[in-house]
Image (cartoon, rainbow, N blue to C red; front, side, top):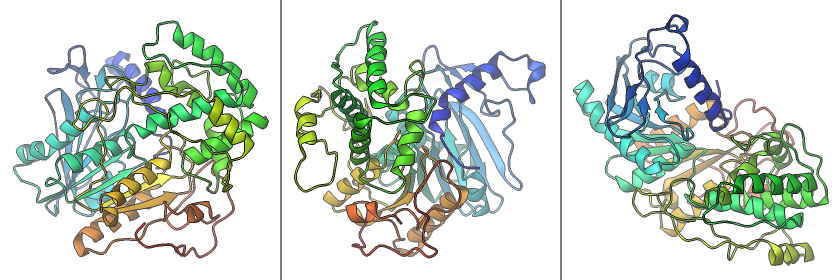
Amino acid sequence: MTMRRKCLAVFAAALALVTALSAPASAAPVACAAPAPSTTQPGYLVFDPNCDVSGAAFTPLAGARTYTGIRDGAAFRVEVPQKWNGKLVVWAHGYRGTGNVVYVDNPSLRAHYLETGYAWAASSYARNGYDVGQGVRDSYALIDIFRQVTGHRARSVIMSGASMGGQVTAVAIERFPRAFEAAMPFCGVLGDTELYDYFLDANVTAAALTDVRIDFPLTPGPEYQAQWREQAGRITAALGVRAGSAPVLTTAGKSWSNAVERRSGGERPGFDSAFAYWNAAPSLAPLNDLPFLFGLYPGLSGGTGGIASGNVTDNQYTYYRLADSPLPTFAELKLNAEVLRVRHTATADPGLAGIPRVNGTPAVPVLSLHDIGDLFVPFSMEQEYAKRALRNGRGHLFVSRAIRGVGHCDFTQAELVTAFDDLTTWVRTGRRPAGDAILNSRAVADESFGCRFTNGVHPNYAASPCPATTTTPPVPPRM
């Protein structure tokens, strides 16, 4: 089973949760306890960690032992194999919307962790929303919870997480550098507020290319959502994109595709299929009548992401490209002259408040994976982390692998298993595993980019077939 479109399934999961809570007791496969009121977050409920939101029981895999509970308003699960190697993986889940029910689930590599001797622990976090700081605190607390419930201290800990959990992972290993021996974020928000800049850029360039005047209210009123829906409707019609159907791009739409490609990671194989996929996908509720990216315009929340103390987005000095020519084209000059410019009033937080900063200063090996066609948390997040790590002299501690998929967290078990095994071998032997040259624009644009570590079928991705034998591109080995 893949993790395809995991974060897009947030609201489907929430619906399943509501259904589970409201269904008659006789309809549930197991007797789940009623959600418990949170002891730390007023108005919150904590779902029974012994049950999945579907109502299925959480039971140990063969030969393993499980422990569950609720601590400080967060549900937790722990599982230890019969032949435990003394090591622990802490798993951090992704964004789960803004509902008031928190729940814990299992990591996608659960079976592999146990088969290779690793125990694992996961938290619901005490709060929902884009609260990375809460995710870090609750994930770090699992190390001591593990000791308390099992009676054994893990002799080493690996931190891992997906999507927002990838940012939880990156922040945790910097905040608590002595607690972890390695990290495996994937499809992660490794560029902190750069994600919101990307959402801003996608929307303001679309508006400028279609001559639709928009604004960016720092304190949007209740009428702004309707105003934006009307403006976005005119923009998307002029681009030739519509939620629920494949785009038929106008001239402006083709220019916008070029802008989004360069802003999300640069020219790369399969981008046309990614662009079509994400523009046919509806956005998140309540703007799910719009193509995906238009429901994520930061102006809808004043640029706070629902968590920051002010607007974290900024494009004052961003120069938008539509092509890779050495000199700017007339169309680029016009776009950059007319695009709406926004100035930030807040930044990534140096601590755990707001949107915590990812410095790019790992003290331990980090191996990451990212779909090159992901336009929710774009491939550029990997590149941003790689740049920061290099600036801080930590480039040798970061390995990134490009996967030829268009979804968000669209990885096969084979891809994840190989990455985890290569990470643990790196820790054990000190030999840095292979990765992709994600900062080399020629390598990224090559038709074979992503072939080396892609292993399995990725629906909706379309590009030239990979060669029968894929070799590492002739680029510097550091990245």
